[in-house]
Length: 137
Image (tube, rainbow, N blue to C red; front, side):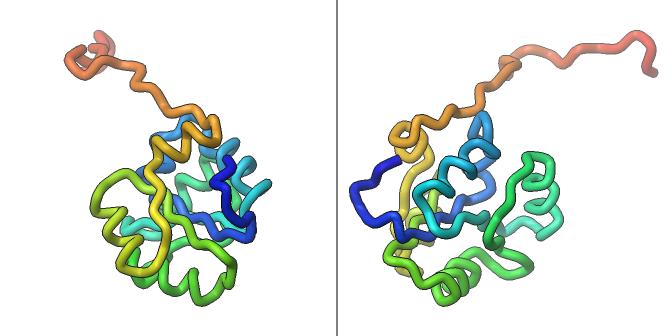
């Protein structure tokens, strides 16, 4: 992805945005080629973030830990002194959060299009009933 700005950047993904990607491991690997620091922010408990990142073989430079997202982003900004701090999220609430703590906001769809990251596809239509097993009560 080339945002036209400095590559001296800290990039944070909202966990829910990261889950929308087809290959989060490849995304992190790609992002490392043009970002100094890459991590995950979430209000979910630490073990949820850790489980997701381990399952997807993601090595993050930071994560939100037991604090809220705003405090996490503020702490990351204080700790990682880069030219840009970019938060990739999904919702208007994510955009408002980024704005409130002085981060740039980038919607996932825009980031994915610019970086040519694939989005996860829903394999099962929502109106389709789950498979029923005959060998289970």
